[in-house]
Length: 252
Image (cartoon, rainbow, N blue to C red; front, side, top):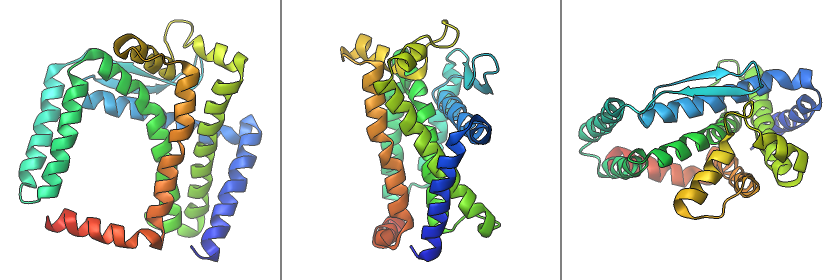
């Protein structure tokens, strides 16, 4: 973290605040965030056996992902893919153990409709935070750019914009009764929004007294983790960890 990195981060921080100030300046970044949000729903849905198509919602704003019915054949193909990957890496004990753990979690989720629905609904906000964390890592570590002089400041701006957007969204659900009432209306009064789906499933199937406001509080706390991890991984402080992890992955 040299002087150049701090200047780039300062530009991204201030730029994100400016972008949030008006609808016109925030629109391109909101579109990018929405794209990743809906891609998160779609990617996870396919992995759980539901063919899905992400799209922008031109009627009610934001985006919407169209989910198909559960197809066991897709789930079997995903399981077969994980099995093949484990076989290819069979000499790497750590990699096989990680794949086995992921498969076990996937199997628990995929075998019940409400669990699939809950995870698919959660995937949108998770992908948003991963987008912010990825751009922040690339900005600080200076990796993955073709024109770093231009792309690094823009990457920092995107990272801060998405992060700020997540915080503002969670805080408004926690403190703004009008915004909470609007959110509870869903998409045209017909489709529930993501956090309401998660809260309702937790209440019905696990007996947890979950609310939209409670989910917003959880989102606010969780939103700090990906960005913090990305910053740590991009700095020299994590060098020993990255080297040790690399040796384990390659030579286990």
